[in-house]
Every structure is written in structure tokens, then in C-alpha cells.
Length: 107
Figure 1 (cartoon, rainbow, N blue to C red):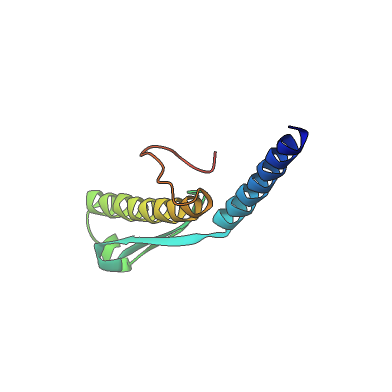
Figure 2: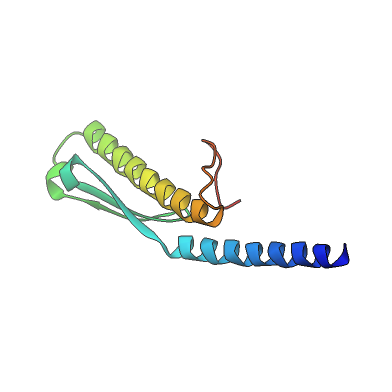
């Protein structure tokens, strides 16, 4: 019984270390989202932090609503890409188990 408990504790510690490593890798991850055929590009981290926005000067001559829509679409595109990366990274760690929709990792 004592050996089993020690083994479980060791596995938990190893899982915690793997989670910290994955979180660190996600913080370093950079994903580009775009819209309007690349006229609006955003750069986002794996932690969903927006790092940069690049707007083609042609779009600046258009109306405000169009620009807003393109920025929203580019951000949503980047979020989608980050979510795919997160799912991929954590599903490997979880042995291929697919997480239910709406579950956000890292916790």
C-alpha cells in the first residue's frame, strides 16, 4: 500500500511538471490570424494575449465598420488557431483524450 501511494505521488509530480512545461511552451507560442485576404493580421500568444495588429493601408481608406469587422475576424481566426494548438498539446499529455467543448486549458 505504501509503495502504491509513493508511485501515485511520483506520477502526480511528473504530470505537474509536464503541465508547467506545456504552459511555458504555450506562453512562448505565437499564432497569426488574418482576415480580408491578409489585409488585417494579428499576432497572438498561446495565452490569448494580442501582441500585434497589422492593417494594410488600403483598409484604412474604407469605412470604420468594415475595418472593425476585419479586426474582429482576424482576432477570431487567431483564437481558433490557438485553441487548436492547445488542444493538440494537451491531448498528447492526456493520452489522446478529447476535452469537452468549453474546457479551457491550462487551468
